[in-house]
Amino acid sequence: MATRMKLKLKTVFVLYFMVSLLGLIYALMQLGQRCDCTEHDLPKDRTISRLRGELHRLQEQMRKSEATKQPLKQAAKLSPPTIFVITPTYARLVQKAELTRLSQTFLHVPQLHWIVVEDSPHKTPLVTDLLVKSGLTYTHLHMPTAKDRKLQEGDPNWLKPRGVEQRNEGLRWLREDRRAQPGGDTQEGVIYFADDDNTYSLQVFEEMRSTQRVSVWPVGLVGGMKYEKPVVEGGKVVRFHTGWRPSRPFPMDMAGFAVSLKLVMANPEACFDGEAPMGFLESSLLQGLVTMDELEPKADNCSKVLVWHTRTEKPKMKREEALQAQGIGSDPAVEV
Image 1: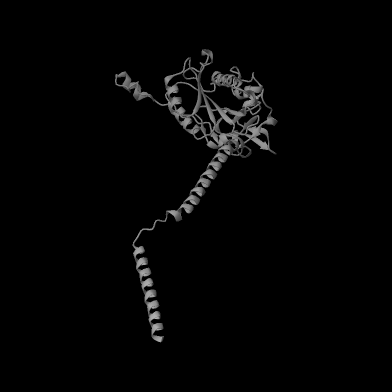
Image 2 (image 1 turned 90 degrees about the horizontal axis):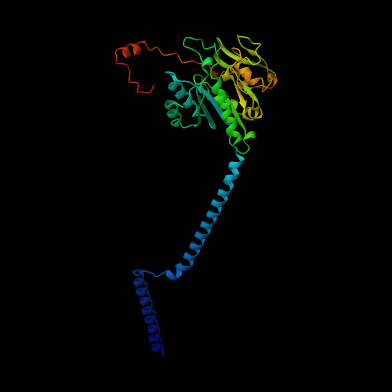
């Protein structure tokens, strides 16, 4: 009986050992086999795919939302009023140099429209080409000065007012162009008369941009003085610091003021008077637009000079003339 029990236990032990051994061998064999986990991965892949789709949908919604908000942001951020700069110009040796310097100053001024008016019976190729290449928004006009109003060789600059017809032509075009546009009569904007030989700080354009009627500031190197300027007390212009006829209605240089576009549109007859006495040209325009009390002082209450009445020296051409007399002068086809 005892012997039979020993045999049964031994048999059970051997069977257990064999089964364990076979299980171990099978497990070792499976380690070297690739596992087909497709069935287990399918639920996980579906989840990832669904999450990716949801993410893509949310991104599209965000993009559409931003696209909708963008025009609203742009509408909220109003563009600054346009500065319309009227520049009279005439043919001379330094004309291209003057206009090049001026145009490259204007390139740094946002929202600027340059109105160039030639003192000529037609538009010249020099000015046309310069404007095309300038990179600026511009309008090119021409208006010749009447012969009886033209300065003759040797005449002093102050003898007759210059640029009258050209500035008035710029005003005429501006009025007609604005009226042709919807709401043009009430459009915000500023008009500035910038001669081509002056020197301008960029700051003066930002100062004038908020003009409501007529804004004013000092001008350097003008009237035989270091500067001329409006004198400001209590935020109002009360008189002018000038060395010549301070009793004039507006004893200012052309470079020392800017006018609201709306004010010019509301006063269609306002213009420069070519028959005005010497020094009264600026007053001939401003008298019909504003009173001294309404002037808006800029440039830190007219305490800073931001524009200078500079003049380019007339080039001396004695050597050029001598070479031309010998038939070996500079090539006239080279544009200077």
